[in-house]
Length: 624
Image: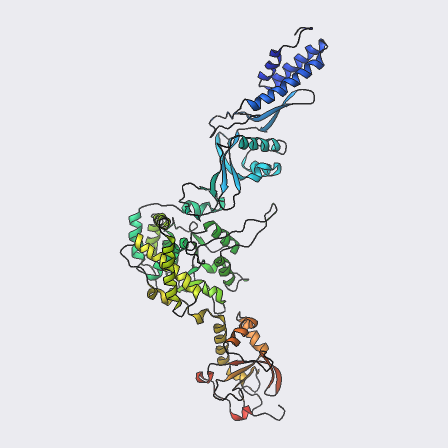
């Protein structure tokens, strides 16, 4: 540099050609020292700053790209130097020195944008080079846009990001995505299985799976393996048992629920005896879709209701198989009514996010295959839960050799699922709906309910498809074949079940309705609950049980029935009498004591063992 001549451009170009920060700093300080001796230090600093600004502008204009060795994709990253030593940019500090700003100390770049077809939310797949190999992780766009979130999420998996460089890494990823719209065009993704329009996961070709790691054991097992012919021939033998065959149909029916606009249902096989091969039966049914091994497609029921509903949302259209339902019971669960209601509604309740806001509401449209040592519904179960369950008791072994069957099924599986889905994709849905309705209408003429008919009609359509596509030597099940497994309307109607429970209770305790004031009465020292009488002025009518309201309500509550709910239904069916004010409670005297009583009309209970009270028991006593 000469004292009276301008600083040469080569001097400043040389500064930016030095990659090593220490060497560059030493070179700049040497140049500054000379400029200071020439008393031109201010001029040198101004020109250096101008050159650096110009250099940064050219970095953006020249289309710099990522230069990582073995990178999955090459992206434009103007303004960033992205090489094997990491990702960084440069700027001038307050003293005019160019300073390197690190975004990440190792190679990293976005390689794919995933757009969820259900929610339209986007996620970013990042590739990063650590420990001698390229690795990948998928995170939400929210993580890539927030300094705190990117540190919290990516630092866990080994990405070198701290609170110091987080904002630069966020900016680098954002720049890469914004500068490469063609290479990073969003692809359709989904985080669940089942129907997605006309496509079906996991068989869809143009939809990427982007599910939670918690469900990897399920996703990995939904595939085909072994020999199709061997699987079909063995299952054809198993299907000679009607219960096993219905389990196959219940499994296949799961993918029909959305297409037929019907409701999720439960298919429950139970037996008080062990060794009936009920677990193997649902494993055989689940082999339609993949490897039915325990812990994969067949789950233990030692879980929670939240766990079942979240897994249901992931399966969406595929059946949920749960073994040994009774393991879920605890001291707070007297029956499974609430579970049945929640899973067959097909929608989860809203839940809050840990980071704030509310999670997406989960839905599903699948069938449930359960096994257990006891019925899933009880005598006091509500009509809704009775309605939604096809429940079959098994008294004999379903299969001859359960161990051999398990061995065959865990080595040969998963072929029928794709065949079934492809058939549905190429079938006019209207024809399936007409077939379903014909079954439904036929069953509605029987002594059953609509919801029972809905579930069973879906099962019959599925069985017809299986016999047409796979088990061609069989004939499809008919309504006559399965009507024995339909609940009658009386079994489902809670008012009928509660009424019969009360009648049985009264029949077992006739002494509680005798007059204790009569000498040598069988109830001379016991409790008096009421009396059995004929309503005055209604000669020839069935007897009426006049029972203390508190005693009746206590019995109903103990047995899981709600008096307020069933009393109206009893009144509608003429099973309960009202007083002159139209109320159900009568203020009357029974054996001289005035209290609140309910008058229940019996179905001629005297024919079943009740003896009409003697005349002296009906007489009004002096103190009555």
